[in-house]
Structure formats: C-alpha cells, structure tokens
Length: 222
Image (cartoon, rainbow, N blue to C red):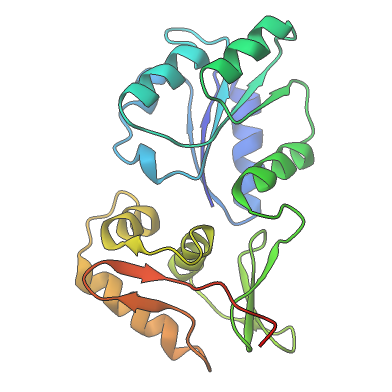
C-alpha cells in the first residue's frame, strides 16, 4: 500500500510514517502543500492522510486543488478540529473519512483498510487453489501457511492487482505504482512478472495483451 501524509506537526507526521513503514507499506510525507505538489506521482497513491489546519494551503484547499487537477485518491482528514461544520465541509469536498486527534494508529489503520478493501473483514484474499495473499502483511501464503519469498516490488504488484481484482490494470499504472520515481520500461515489467511467476506452482496473474495485467476473482465454489 502507498500512503501520502500531509501534516505540519513533525512528531505526528514522523510517527504515522514509522508506524506504516513497519507494516511494510510505502509512505511519503510532506509538511506543506508546496512540497506535495512537487510529487509527480500523486495518482499512484492508495490513500491520502491530510491535516486540515496548515500553513499555506490548508487541507481543504489542497484536496480541492488536487481534484481540479484530476487526482482522485481516497482521502482521510486527520484534525484536532471538532466543530461539525468542519466535518460537513470535509465530506462536501469529497473526503472519504474524518478522524479527530488524538487517535490510535490501529484505528487509523482500520479506517484505511475499510476504505481500500471490498470487505473490511477480509484481509486474506484467496487467489487460486494454491495461494492466498494477506492485504495487511503483504504476505503470499501457500495452502500450508508457508510464505512465498517475494521482494518489495512483487508484493506491491500483487497488492495493486488485487485492489483492482477482475479488472485490467494498464502497464503505465503498474510501473508508476511499483517503481514510483524510477524510470523503467515495459521490458522491466515483463521481467518482473516472469520472475514472480517462476516462484509459483500455479500462476494467478493474467496478461491482457496490449493492455496490462489482472488477477481474476477466485471462485471457491468450483
């Protein structure tokens, strides 16, 4: 999972970053909107975590500008403001959730999980008759519960395809998500897919020629 934090409080920003990086997620953190808008891969994130009361553009103004630029990423506002009018304004601008400070990291994690997974109680996704993937720990497990050794890019790739399960994810989106700021080409992606498949007894990654890759939803009734 890729998370972007916009928070001017150094302590909160660093603590949230550390918490999610320990969970094996990729985290970018910015202290103001000017820094955020220098990020060229804003659409590649899974979730935005925005403070509201900030110097320069506040969280509301930042979200509004992002949407005008065509950046549509689920956003959770994290704020000490308790007035219901702020809550109304947040949802009016299109935020996905709203959490008040102080908060527990576990609660924030659960809210993110609820937003990003079809079924918030299902973190273990069955991929085929041999494998399942844990969306929280990013572990690929076989039927005996043994973890298949994956590198960071392979974990991010599977996570992205599961997030869009049964839908084709185009090559450019995959490369932007997995490699972030690194310049790679389609050959790099094909090589990564080939290496990943070589670790599997039964492949679950489908190549849609000329378009991208996908993972189909597994029918456990068969």
